[in-house]
Length: 383
Image: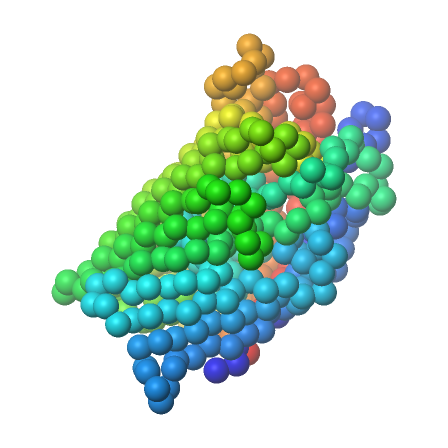
């Protein structure tokens, strides 16, 4: 079966420059980070999936290519990039086996299919702490620049896109209306890169228990509780003799029974805490960070409209172990959005995010205090 989707959007950022006229990434539109006002085809994915019929119905495959302009394609200047290429064997009861490149088990925002994601932009905690960046030895830091030629995207490699290359054992067990799922994965810890850049491997663990109310697919109704954990090491791209532990963990709950939806998740990380697209040389660190979100939706009865509201918070630089200075930075965002569903495969999202950034250090505070609201509209079609 051929499958895919297209997302086209427009975003406008209302943040002001710092006192000297400079801009940092939160004040610019990703992935190019050179303007505050942009149209974009941010995703255009096409793929094929199916089973091994007529030879073996217990074998299936999935192949997906990204053709849009986003954190996967823009850093390397690619016109297309492979995001998924996996084979799944379903021969062992209770232990399905998947091998190749695919989404690793983890946080809800990353694990959820993006074409049914209820918002246009990720929360700050997911974007900064979970959406991994991979610096190269040739990547350099860039100070705040004047727009519209800010050019703040200093990473030359694609984001990890919540994916890895490896092998996963997983399955789901049913008990009355409940479904219990587990996943154990071992991966390279090198994102969308086919090979491994060192001898270290990442371990991924996941568990969920869901009371299923009805429906199927990404809009299935139920009450789900979940927890996940990731652990690995990264080799310092700027000093290959150094390694850094990287751990991420989280737990959450999601309730969906139309006309209401509520989701809440808390996440924590240590090591390799992202410092911004303009500072690849600073990501190799042993700092701590945590954050979370609570969001809800109301499907207005007898209409095609949906109203969404989300609050998310993220704090990085907590308990800095290598400095006596307190350099914590916090981002708080309230997002109000609405969706109109033309049909089951076509919808438009409109949202406004009110953002507040602050830091305990004067230099960072001077850059972040002028971060303001962001408007976005996005059209999605699945084919």
